Image (cartoon, rainbow, N blue to C red; front, side, top):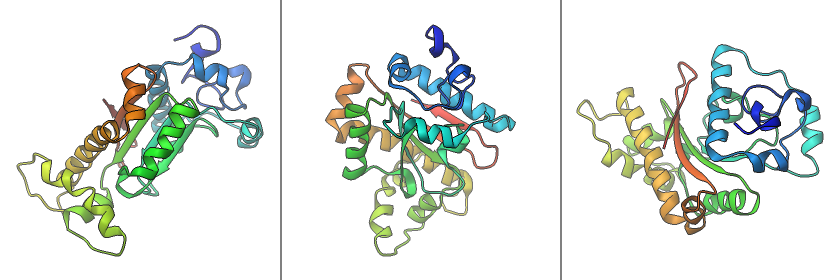
Length: 229
């Protein structure tokens, strides 16, 4: 870890990334710019460990709100599902101003989301792009079942490549949660690959080492976030 305040990354603070002496304040540009992508990911891992133990850091949201009102310096941009049981800020013990979070059913990418993440990284300075899926995902089940409903039909079509390319020897149905979770993981992997393919801006930042694009899966039953490249 970096010396000084950065040494406390993921250990203490109101904001996940802040040291004790600034525990109620929002993430600053100075501290964010000192962090590496790997340090930011490690801080999120540490936050999830605290969440699983019921040891989330005491924080003052009002002071975080006030501290971040004049500017924001998030360390990461997340693409996660809208599922009400998988709020990234809660399960990784994050504070106001720590991350950007785009949420859409099935955590799929599209031009609007890519534009948002490009803003987050290229213009606002975020250093990690994390695609986070989760177990027992309803959007994944819908794609497996070929569900159709208004605009949802087109959204689920973006998940079907994951259904088709998932290697699985058991029952390939939405009733088989092991298969659902295997597809969800594959969907994260494909979304990460699609971000690199569809966004030259983000691909260039990653090739220079300015950002890291990674995937993760959240387990609804045990509260664990599994990170993978």
